[in-house]
Amino acid sequence: MIDRALEHLATHLNGHFRRQFQVAEDMVVVSNLQEVGGAAVASSANRLVLFLSGIERDTLAHRAGTVPTAPQHGVLQKVMPVYLNLLVMCAANFSGTHYPEALKFLASTIAFFQGNAVFDHQNTPDMDRRLERLALNMENLSSQEMHSLWSIHGGRYLPSALFRVRLVTLDSDAIRGRAPAATGTDVGAVQS
Image (tube, rainbow, N blue to C red):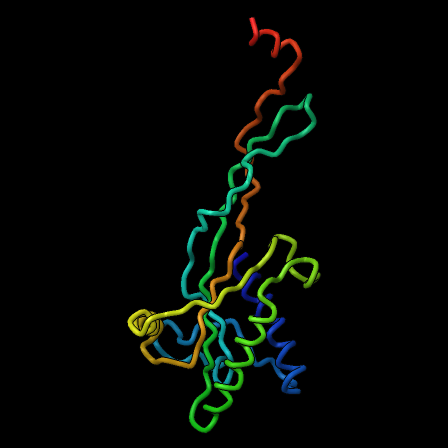
């Protein structure tokens, strides 16, 4: 599900770049910046790279934990889904004389997500049905937080913006049990 969320954002950002800059190729990739051994990921060169920088459990997203069925069948007790906030880095990985392109694509990314801060099934019908909604907020980082974050990701700062993507839901669809349905005789027994 996390992969579908990032791919959805990349697809729509690529469409935006095609319209705005008349580019034929995808300028946004979902990728690491470095391979496990430390070498640069070749497919991320001269691209805007979206990568997962962190995951947080959203403790404010409260939903009902039971799904009612027909009264004669009782109530299904489902395992509660996990609501996540994804910290998604948008890094302009352009080098040398392409540095102005990095700034151009990064500024356009910020403007696009500012104007399209919510993706749902109404405004993006192609969104994976397992995703309910994606809401983006740009995060402010102090110099120390920025340094720590880029140290984790290889130590080489790139022009970038960090977005918190809210309301990514992971639901296993697991059923925990079934509570018996209340009947008229059950209610009378409680009152006696």
